[in-house]
Image 1: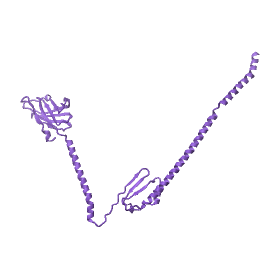
Image 2: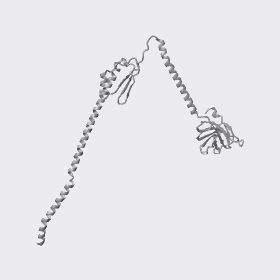
Image 3: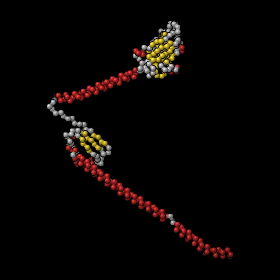
Length: 308
């Protein structure tokens, strides 16, 4: 724990000369951790130790820990009449000063608890990393500032060659809007108007092409032809979209007409299959007439047969 942890004050009042002698407590834990304390002890020659007789009570600034949160272990060597009493708690100790009461007989001690070593080591590591990072940043800035001055001193009359910028291609969205940030593109042959026209007609490569040079005094050769070619390709795509939309509208109208025809045909079939009220009345009248005619024809014959 450190030297501060070993500065535990020993406050005890033995009841008799044969009392158990306790040494200075050694704290093996830190603040915010469960207490772990090592306490040396010694008995007078001829004395015996009853481990069950030793009772440990721990008191902080605001409470006395219950017995089930305090554990003791006695390690006693009878040959040397000495040993250790290990005191541990199951709860964290947040107070820097704790009081212990041990028997037999009862003795009181005060132990000091240092901050946990992990927290102190973490703070030192963070400070070291921060200092190292600052030193590396300062060294890198000084090196970058020193390089141009060294080059100018070595050959002041020679023109400084510009390093070509790194090509960065960004493709955004379905239109494939491309930004070509290439300062050395002026030295290379650019796309012609016909090439840009082909890109506009090809659906797989359709999109805008925007060339941006990092050197204002060296515009790309194809920079003037690119806007007109892109505009022509855009116009053709708009016309193709309009024609496709018109064809879809025509197809929708034809489908609507076909649906109307089918609806009217179905209605006519239903009308023809179901007889109207007039037809039903005519059928009923015909049946009644047929019944009356049968009565007048068959009734006289039936009467003659019944008389005979």
